[in-house]
Image (cartoon, rainbow, N blue to C red):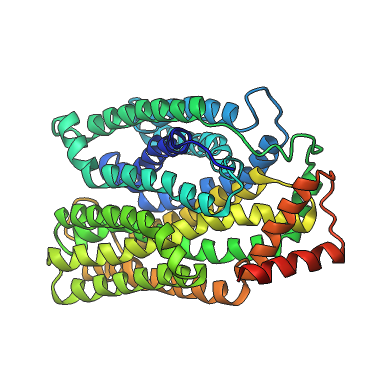
Length: 472
């Protein structure tokens, strides 16, 4: 099924605002709490962990709600719009203290942060769940899947590389005021870009229109019986935890370990550009290489980049060339991994329909948001604990014990997580090659026949396998 360029890019544009919101919180909120509001790092680490785990519980429930939604506007777009409007308002309140101090401030920050996570889920789950319904064509899906990722990377690049400068300009030296105004601008961008997505994107896959509503028990069945989803959740979670740890600690690392906060901008700028390049060439690289090779490359390059950062941090901590090169290697490979991840989830939706008999896009794609939340929880918890246990003092010269702790968390720990992720992918993820071709051909066959059931007899499978052999 072919869709217009207008619809492809309208869907992708929504990721600009969506990920601008995500990045301002993921990159700067901990720094805002510790260095601007003066809240203890230990408390923040605990808050991040509890909030993200709570959000992770909400994600599959939101997927269930979306899958059971039936409106004349479809089941995704209403929730995307509602979630965007509410989350934009909460974001503004997240970056203001309302004049509170002491325990009242701690309570206020906790409530706002948890509320922000819940309302982000309200929008994020249906947004990504819409992807498999844009087209059934495998190659076109690979191309479409990277468009929102590229826009998201552009947003991330802008927020991370220009954020502190924008805060300084808007606040005129007052970071508290600067962050508030920055968050307000990002909220407006969020609403505008998502409005374009909602207006111009449509659901084209109507195979689930007459499908019965999914119960909580059936949702659990969908998750447990889909073995490829379980494998996906495991290796992506481990990789994401490694990424989130780097993301949470990087500003502290460059400010206090290398002694040059300007290198933070160098690292995230080159990283952002490399991510976009990696996503941009992803469809072409996948067409030339197998998905497995591209995925492994997406794990190997970040490891090399992090190790280079470790070495340069020891022998030449303020060498901007080595910092930039490490950012390029880290994120170019990360772009490959992200592209593979998005395509894999769309394939897992098809695999679930093939194996179980029901199509549950929102339940399955809610797992993506769940993974982000859990990895963010562990990244934030570990960062907070390291800052608290190593004697971190905001805006002061740090002890060698603190510096070594920051260096280990920034470099060694992420490498361990990514290595384990790679091993699990190689061992357990099988949705490539013949199996994937069999899934796609089986579903196409059943939709053409319009039989109303996904049960396939051995004769049909044999015929499909013969067709697969002819296409090799």
